[in-house]
Image (cartoon, rainbow over all chains, first blue to last red; front, side, top):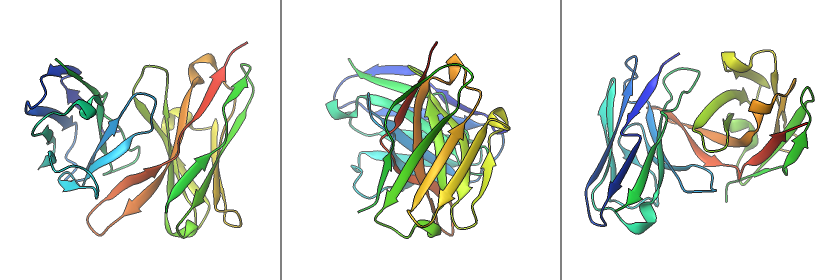
Length: 107
Length: 121
């Protein structure tokens, strides 16, 4: 089973700040990495697939990068509506494991 | 448009079983696999397994082997997830999600609204 480790577990930033979340896989997963946003009480929402592909309808301030074992989700200018928990998930092999999540708050 | 509609919340006693449904709409059912994910209160996301809706075959997470069964009904475009021998730590929101597959990768694109299963004596 591939372990996914996200950091930090939580962060607080100001509106307009650049925010970076990292995700590390215990084995190489090429680019089989998805990022989700989950607002309180809602189902996860797809942001990025294939490590760097922005899902249709997702604001361009979100971007993803990385390959192999190290990946990054970046929010270029944090907005109030970005308050949520963010999860990475590897889709390289079953079980499709998730990172433990990163809670993003507004300072 | 694509939708996944899940059955309503349930309360079960320890040792019982629960069967959650996920009705899919807006796309060709047998073309996409469906995954199940759960989330305990205040916790992260946990993958349960996946069903090939065309063949009706499933792959389960080792943690749930022997307790979970996923099935599909092509006549109603619905998938089911049954979890048996329920324990209090099975209390969680259970989600179904559609798997999209491209030539480059696979990912979960559409999710159901979630079904809250509470296990309590």
